[in-house]
Amino acid sequence: MRMLTVSLMMFAAMLPRSTTADPITVSLSRQAGVGASIAVPDHPLEKEIVEKDADSLSAFTSVSVEGNSVAGRDTLLSSLSPDSRRLVARDSDIFSARSVAGNATASVGGLSSIVWEFRLDQPHEFDLFSTFDPQRTAVELGNGQLTTVLSLLSHGVFVREVFRRESFEPTVVNEHRHLGVGTYLLNLDAFWGLQVTNAAAADTSSFSFAFDLNPTTTPPTTPEPGSLGLVAGAFVMGAAWLRKGASS
Image (cartoon, rainbow, N blue to C red; front, top):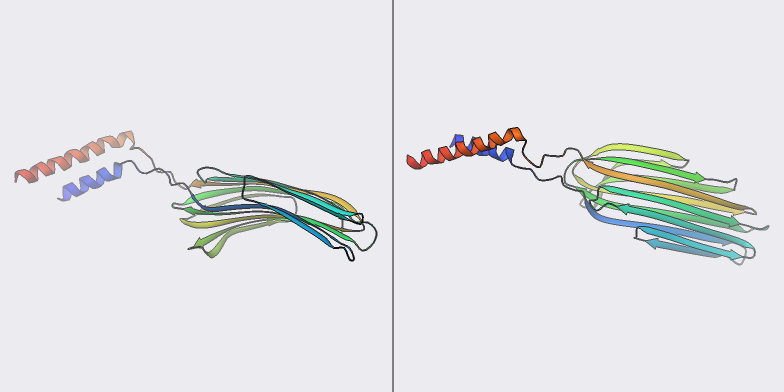
């Protein structure tokens, strides 16, 4: 009996293993929005446009009153590979604001976001590459921020941050980490705002992003050629034991 057990264990060890388990997307949401406002006495004006959940998103709005004007466009292009191993995104913002003499304040801002929840059934490595390129002019207020956060979840509840990167100036980020089995939430937020009083300005901002998942180890899908003899040997030894048992 012991010989049969050993033979079967040897045979099972030589059997083809299952292919690498792909990451599983639990949910994916994407959003591009732009808001504009002009604050003038007795004539405040605000407008906001938001586009959601498509590979190509473009939001545009403009407002004008009493010679003051603002306009903005936020464009977000993103794609998730069919096997959920690669998420890429590219965003661009174009803003302009003009405030004539007086107390008027012209403001415009854009916000793009990607929220991706995924599950790993085996350990993976991830590689993150992103660039952030805000182009500021000499204005009273122009600011931008790119924030990337990866969090570990348990039954939909936050456990801890795996990493966080915040960029306020032109930045290139490279990140490589090991991820264990579990459910993760990737948040990507990009903001750019422009505000002027008694002035005129035009700003642009852009970012690119790539997030890759690769299995830590890739098990073989077929036995090695040298192991085929061991598999055959296991069969022969098991069959011999069965014949011996039947004849005794």
